[in-house]
Amino acid sequence: MSVTVENLEGLQRRVMLSVQWSDVRSKVMARLKERQKRARIDGFRPGKAPMRMIESIYGPAIQDEVLNDAAVAEFYRLTQEEKWNVASLESLTAAEEQKDESVLNILAVFEVYPEIAINDLSSLKIERIVAEVTDADDDKTIEILRKQRVRYNDVERPAQNGDRVIIDFAGTIDGTPFEGGEAKNYPFVLGEGRMLAEFETGIVGMKEKESKDVSVSFPEDYHGKDVAGKTAVFKITLNKVSEAVLPEVNEDFARSLGIENGDIAKMREEIHKNISREIKRRIGDMTWDNVTKALLESHADLQIPNSLVQRESERLRQNMMEQFKSQGMPQAKEDSFPLSMFEERAKQNVHLGLLFAELVDQNQLEANEEQIRAVVAEFAENYEDPQEVIEWYMKDPKSMQNLKGTATERNVRDFVLQKAQVTEKNLSFDEVMAQGQMRF
Image 1 (cartoon, rainbow, N blue to C red):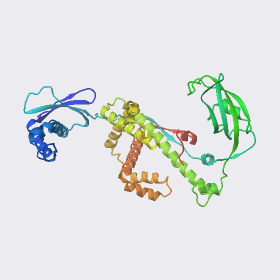
Image 2: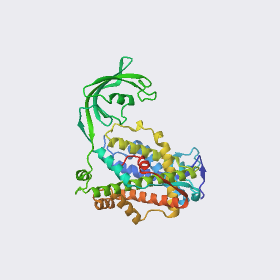
Image 3: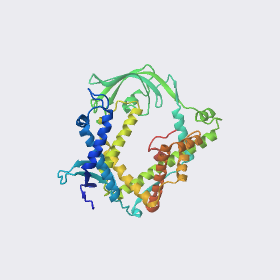
Image 4: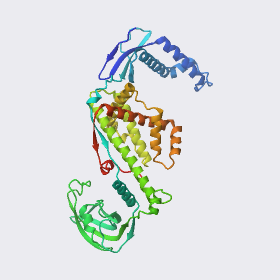
């Protein structure tokens, strides 16, 4: 018998299902008998309540369960028979018109996956990001590491940029104190831009225990709306001045970075390896971003199942909730993060996921064991005992599945780059590192 599928909006479809009442009634009766054995009803011993009473209490709910189970089973039977590429079953409702008393007609509304045709990849124009790590970049990194280990010594001279100062301050606008305009023993480093420029400039040259009034104009776009665009006068008292003392690049410094024998040459070698690995990761991510942008733009007309967007939005929200909880904020609630916050990102993820899956399927790009092991080894290089990390990953199926996804993603990236019109964009170490903080 042919099945008629009605096209609704977008990727939605509707089909009529038929469920035999005789099958439903027999299954309902079987479940009622099972319920009768376990039922505890006042006035009757356990399992001895009459079937009529069991039916009146539990019958409607059990019938609904059986009908839903039967309709779902029939739907997925037809899905396999008709080879529908179903993204989600959205609803099951009884049809308004029931012509045959022996059959219940049910309308099933569902979404299908779109038909995906990968466009000509040779028309894509993509920038591949390239960068090299030089000796000068190693020196910059060493300076960063020195600054991360800075200590401060108290001095009696006037304050200058680079010093850590501890101050008391109290601000007024037109002679009236304002919220957030006062603090005691407030520490910060001059010249880092943590405070407004006029405020910091007013402190430069002050000595310990000295007080002075400093006039500060708040920008029009200042985050504190009560003071934005206004001028305040701060009475500042300098309590302490400390100068920065950076560690020398010596054996002790090398040991602090994990070089047990303090070998400075070995330290530089390890630093070069670490930042080269980080640069490689970042330019790979940046190139992948360019690949995904080109893919999305060249397949902008691809229809996306709304149900998948909804599911992805919920996943993104759940990830955010877990992140908040891990940061010690368990009070965050779902209603604080409406799904609409995640919709655009979810659409992009689903869109890309559909294209990604089609490319993998069409071109046999799923990562093989050797490629997965290479990714595992690469991740393990970041740890003190790589072999131990490799063994841990190999024993954890979930982690291995994630790394398989990473390896497959690289296969897709390389495949698209082979087909596309690729130009190389050289970036400096600083330009690449500006994409985020270095991990040490």
